[in-house]
Amino acid sequence: MSWENNVRKVVPYTPGEQPKLDNIIKLNTNENPYPPAPGVQEILDNFDIAMMRKYPDPNAQILVDAIAKTYAVKPSQVFVGVGSDDVIAMAFMTFFNGDKPILFPDVTYSFYDVWADVYRIPYNQLPLTEDFRIDPKDYARENGGIIFPNPNAPTGVLESLETVEEILKANPDSIVIVDEAYIDFGGVSALPLLEKYENLLVVQTYSKSRSMAGMRIGFAIGSEKLIKFMNDVKFSVNSYTMNQITLLCGAKALEDDRYFRETTGKIAATREDAKKRLTELGFTFPDSYSNFIFAKHKTADAGVIFEKLKERRIFVRYWNKPRISQYLRITVGTPEEMEQLYTALTDILKEVGA
Ligand SMILES: *Cc1c(COP(=O)(O)O)cnc(C)c1O
Image (cartoon, rainbow, N blue to C red; front, side):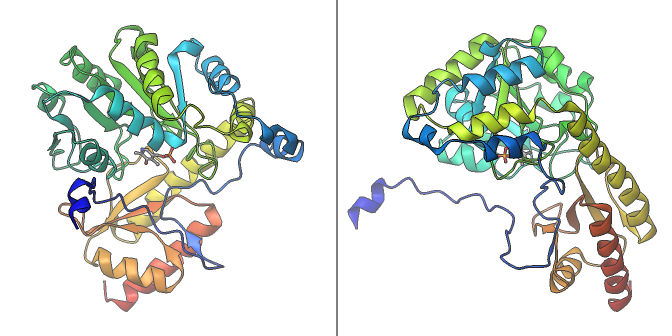
């Protein structure tokens, strides 16, 4: 059929499984095991459905203002979207329009190459070092833009601000996007570098550290100039990306800093304990600063462990891809969930004679 010649054909991103089973332990999509800030419940309990008649505020002002206040920037430096996936897709569309390839690591968030393909942006995937680190010198070459997560996913490796700044220094003519989806679990944000670099865009999300993956809230902070360009594109595609309930819940969640510190702190503590327990079981992993651990067993096959965990209703993430096919990405759950994981792993390793 000739119309098929005009279809934009893409190989879509494959999200982690959302199994429709009860009694599972879900450690496969880096969701937060704790509920959102309690204030969010009050917003929902008091929401008047008459509000739904009207379009939401296209400027998402209540949420933009709350984010600006929390991160001590101007509201004109904040862009919000339907999860950081929406924010990053919008940034690709806005900023990556040259002929030169954009750059990102070979082992990284597997959405970047999908967006590049869908928007027809050329790209180069630069190999991380043997121990999954970014060598900033690799990024001192001609390019049409740069993006990397910090901490990286799925490795959990954190790069220093010096490394981030070295990449920025070498690239005054490119937009550099730092995807900080996991920064709240122990990393140092690149936000202070905004004072020096007009071409830096920092992206964060409510999905991991703020326990609101289902609500879909992401944001970017950058120079007023970059944010204006992004908003111009957004208002040219869909003015009403964020619904009114989400705007209210998102603003409310930021008020409770104590709860935020408590839950992210608990996850970091459980992660540190997991490093000891997994080591005792014979796993190695790059040191993680995120809410997951990217672990490899010294003898047992990752694909086999993955399947056997699944039989026991424990879901982790596994990619049969070059360089990482012997690794499992294990999200840090509650201490109770982690105990069940260690018990299952002990059994499985015995079973396979590891
Ligand atoms: C989870 C994740 C995102 C996107 O999350 P949203 O739910 O769309 O906010 C972006 N980047 C990385 C590296 C992630 O792991």
